[in-house]
Length: 80
Image (cartoon, rainbow, N blue to C red; front, side):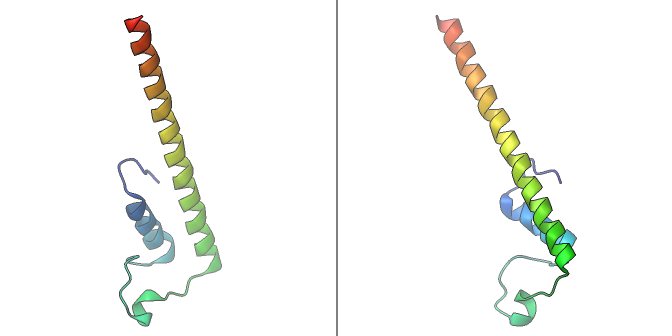
């Protein structure tokens, strides 16, 4: 799953649709629409993909922080 540029809500909605066949994560105030039976294996796959998306986001954030820290060091070296 590519998470770049997507909100967490969009990522989770994609996972729910792909693995659990759930069309929306919005509450629709109807038991028939809000409760779903899913296979345990499908749930496990969805949870694994959500975990991997979180790991990917964490890696991207770390990379961005490292780039920012390097830019600040470069700027400070230029000033000095």
